[in-house]
Length: 293
Image (cartoon, rainbow, N blue to C red; front, side):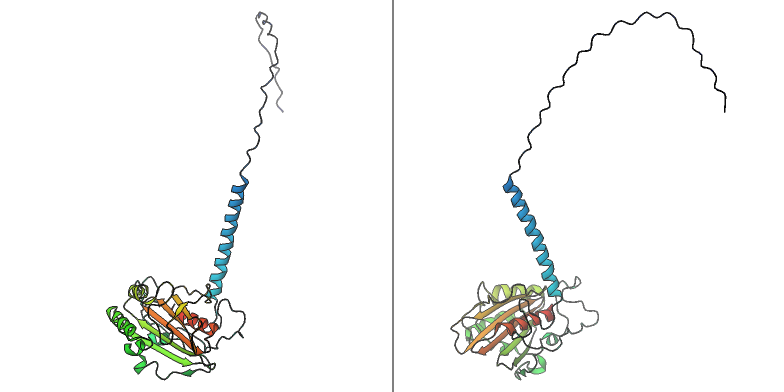
């Protein structure tokens, strides 16, 4: 270790004595004023809490609904409890292939929302045990416009609607029909136009109104919105407008639904003596919608 050198100090000159410091006077700090906490309006807090809870619940319901619809099987109908509730047994349902190089109807590359698949292949097949209607689908699988119009009751409606279809450039009508084991008769019609915009105008201006369709089908002069149709039965790219005949409806009850999906307008009709059951009608509409999606 290095030896520390002694610290030397220089000699100090005489320094005059310091004056005495004045006496220290203690000064008390000003009192601290503590403001009382501001009371928030409990009504505002309750409102915020209610809205927050509502948003969380709606988000959860929306997610579960979307998941349920995405996982819907061919025998499922939203809102129904079991498979023994009157629904029909349909064969396995698959969408037909698209022509090579053609986009799906709702792809970004298809702004007109055209269904390039064969329209006849987009018809829902008949359920197990049903007897096919030999009058449908018509020659070569295409139904003549006049045969489609025969589904409507009055000559005036047939003439007016026939002219509307011509004015909107109707391209094809595909159709299928059957009679189920319980006696329910079903008809499905698919009408194709040049674009989704044309089909939208046709539906909005000529086919449906607030509570009823604009043209009455045979045997169904008085029909109104079907309140039994489950609101959660939504297929993403298909709008449906369902109607039912209210009592008294005579010997048969008629249920019907218009579908709009891109360039296709569909019509599903079911009738049965004594009353057409709601479940198979809902099931048929949903499955046909899925094929058009």
